[in-house]
Image (tube, helix red, strand yellow):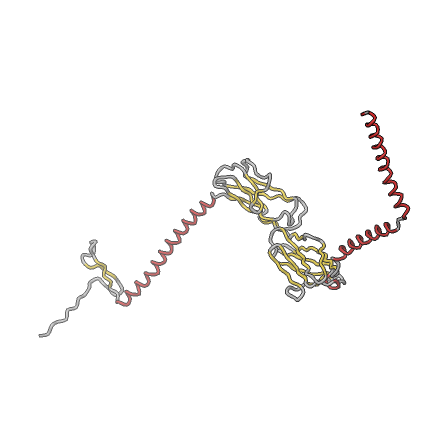
Amino acid sequence: PHVPHVVRVRLGCRSGQRTRSGDGAGEGAALTDCRPEGERGRSSDRQRPAARRRSRMGTAAALGVLMLLHSAAAYTDPIIVTSPPILDSGDILTETVLRCNLTNPPSSVEGHVWQKNGMDIPDTSDKTTSTIMEYKLSSVDAKHSGAYSCHYFTTPAVNNTIYVKAPPGVSSDKKSEYGNEGDVGVLTCKSSGYPFVESWIWSRMSSSGVHELIVNGTEKFHIKNSGNKTELRIQPLTIEEDQGDYICNATNEIGTRGETVHLRVRGRFAALWPFLGIVAEVIVLVAIIFIYEKRRKPDDISDDDEQGSAPLKSNASMNHKDKNVRQRNSN
């Protein structure tokens, strides 16, 4: 028998619209989508970016709140304003003032102290409550360069640093060095100040007054650098070639400074001359005494002998007289 095909028709639902099944008014009414299946998927895909945008907006709002709270907390943190923060003009001969100003201190200020390179500067510690600290520099050079920090005695303690930069100070222990021909000549230089030395260069003054650059690692010259110290070795020394002025130059980020050391080269037997001089003096003195003794006259020698024997005779006679007196007294 023929089975009729039953077609269900949803009243009130047109293509591309949604309607509710059931009574259409209660909370239990279900939403029925009248659109084709493919169109329904495209609708759900369009809803996903909107959800992502809402999620991003929520995250951005949370980050904004956190940044606001952080800025509010940072506003109340202690701040030390330094003047100047970095001083690197170099070789200022006039007096310079380092200054710190503390705002929003974590507690009341109970004192201060200035430090240079981590060490307390004498006569800078006090018990005052001022939020301003000052320190005077007579000049900005290698001697006065370094890291200056202003320390406030608060709870907790706070500090900040001012960097004073200058060209390096270069010096040598001896302005003139001596070496013997054929030996090893050693010249040294040292640097001081802040920033630290980045490179060393050795040169020597030629007879024509021109600076000749010394290359490390050659057959004759060897340079050894170790931080703030440099050493030049010359081997073997010769009077004709190596005697003269040598210049060591130190360079940091601010500038370059140098020092001159004069090298004197003595002959191979130069160290023997003092000894030979002493020996010659002794020989001459002995010869003079010997000649003097030989040239003395025999009469002078006999006179000395007679003068030496006369007192002995007088003493013997005196003793004989004393004996005679004693014998008479005994009788």
